[in-house]
Length: 275
Image (cartoon, rainbow, N blue to C red; front, side, top):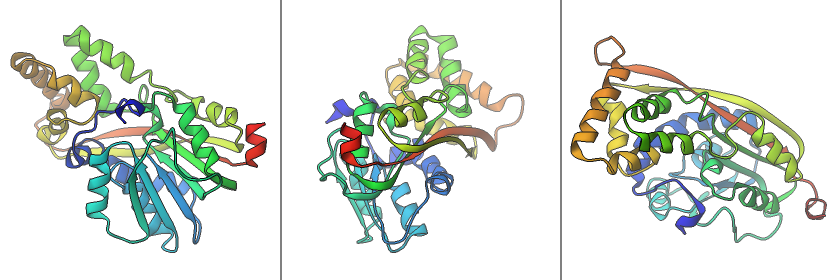
């Protein structure tokens, strides 16, 4: 089922290092915006290793959350670390959900839709499984303008290698990552009361080694690029990125801003959407 994502998924621990630690931070401001309710049945579409699903239960202990992801390794990781019976994680394609129409009281998606080759199909499915009046919300990185730590890597790599420049172009022109694109997609899908906002977190690293470690793994676009380099190319890139990270100071902690676009809307009658 790899055809429904362009994100390279290899290992749950690798995802935690690459993105999970940041999705854990983003979950709270996202839920402040998207909201939660008592005794809801909630879908986390593209749950990764489960941080958003867990955050929903922390805010709404009476709810039940179903997390789905295309990557079996992420679902296995989420299950192994979250045995709570109110949580259910399973492998599924966000573009072809198994649930009947109107199953969920709230449908959420965090840091996923910009990696889906057919994002409008996934949005249509999120709409289909939402009951009338349910809030459907999503958030994605402002990849081009607000993703400082990631840009530092790809801008440095692109200055050294045209292949990295091609990957950078793909990475920062992903669907739904520009201002207004999420809200336009929500309106096109038929949602009511659509709004869009900007979320903000800080990405904090203990050292350059902490920053560089995810690129030596197997998860995500950056690691995928580094894995294809020769040893001498990788060493050259590491030294250049190190210089960008140090930026004239001794190695140690760094903190970078990270911005994400977020959208929410209300599901109308399903026949209205289909009509």
